[in-house]
Length: 280
Image 1 (spheres, rainbow, N blue to C red):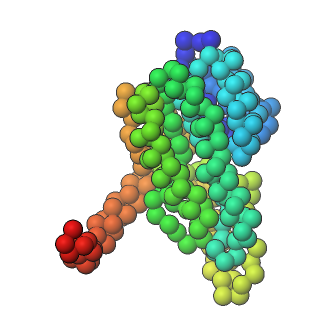
Image 2: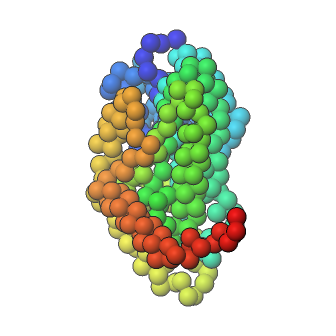
């Protein structure tokens, strides 16, 4: 049992997960850092008496329950759940196999659902907690070559927005984070799997896109350390934002989508509004 705030972070072995863990530890919080190899997780973050590393493949319900139980056994509670673990299946929809699309949604949507389902009973007993879920600007606006990824992230947006209404009476808050392009590991070969090119019509654009993204890796404008520090700061607020646009490019994505929706609503306002029964 600890009096410190306890953070439970998925995908904490590399990338943004490592930075969030370090930022939380720097605030003297207790951190449960999870990943498929706890040894690699601890090596990436660095040994710390407030750190507890646990094995967790988010796609496995049993491991989610076991990891949450281990966190409670060690620290007695979970105050902030960070759903961060992820990967990226990139490619045009026709060239992504059904198995790849399912794997993408399994990791990015059903994975966080598994962990959240395991953690919610703890937070309900506490009558307190924060669900901090890493989405993406791809959960706000779809993009070419990102159909599977966007499908999963759009699902995360709808799930958390709905779940927030269900759990708020128990003192459980939620925050969805939509990062733009940050210098994480997402575009590395460890995290990104490209669809096998099989359709000539897409071949030229596939080569151009894959080359551009490979060239962008390691050069993204967003600083993951600063993002992690911002998330720790926001999590400390009594009323954290329901959504946080992470990065100037994310702010622009929010504004563009909002303006597009307004324009689409206005374009056929008369027709849209005429669809009720004439004599209700």
